[in-house]
Length: 346
Image (tube, rainbow, N blue to C red; front, top):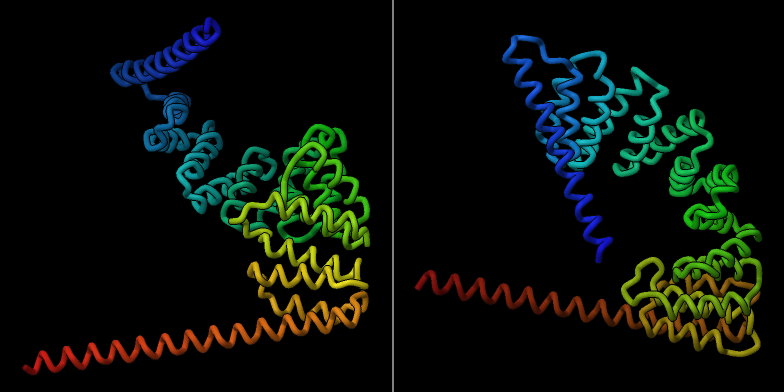
């Protein structure tokens, strides 16, 4: 309780100090103007940043726009105007400001970092990647920038490059679970056997059904079917019903596929596949692909084709039902129109 009171007092003191500083700056500005002396850009900048720290972005913009008229405070003012635009979700404006700074000062690390992050927000990952590439030339020791760069490369499906970038930060990776995971995922997307150990190590200390699903897929690719099925089942148990990436039905289909290959002598895979279909898995193309897999027995392929035929019959029945419902609705609408016309004539 005593610590809470002390913290509260410190917070109140900090707020008082901040507001008092803003008061002094504003008073100084007032006195300078009254004396007929020119107000400096530094004073405008100080007031703008004071308002920025208060979260009063409109006032901050006004003062920073004044401050940027001077060369001495131009870059700093522009940078903070970009931050304001970003905070207010005016991303195109923010990107234009940050990249405008880079035209004057290509090695400005703060502007590069801000421009890259803004471009990610806008979905312009190609441009973001270029900014991060430049940033890592200037500050190669920055693991945070390296992680962000790798994240962009991963989104662009350039997995080997993402892995290469992250491999430069072995010490940071020891303590940073986000770096560890992205590194393992980059390897997993390339179906590298090293991904098995790295994903397993991450899952020992963390819990994520999607990551476990990816881990199981890598195990399956390298034909560790028993372990893959076990991990798929854990992922299916842990994944939320509302998940869309992956869906529970997608995981159940993956279990069926692994069983069809690992236990081709029995029909356990077919049973699991039928369960996935009953739960809502209707991807006929994915199911048909199983019939081309040489590792699946002919008997099970026959059963799979039966499942496919059943799905198609259900789809045709649903389409016919929908067609009938639409025809009935059109007939009802027409009848209502005719009745309205008769009433109007009457």
